[in-house]
Length: 101
Image (cartoon, rainbow, N blue to C red):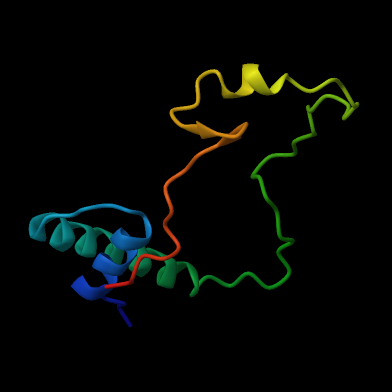
């Protein structure tokens, strides 16, 4: 069964991602995403009984440094390159009150 992504779903995803897409882009991305879902459906047909779940194809080890407390950057240094700031905080555009299409 092939899953088809329709234009309404593409426009909804684009809205969530704050993207403005043309009609041609919606059609093309709909085709591309439908093809990706077809591949995932194909993977669902593979027999994975007895196969241990993994995150990587090869054995890997954590290479992170130890998590040790250290002094934080001063607020002025953190906000030095902020495009907008107010009262010592980052100022970002409000997006939660926007209506969905």
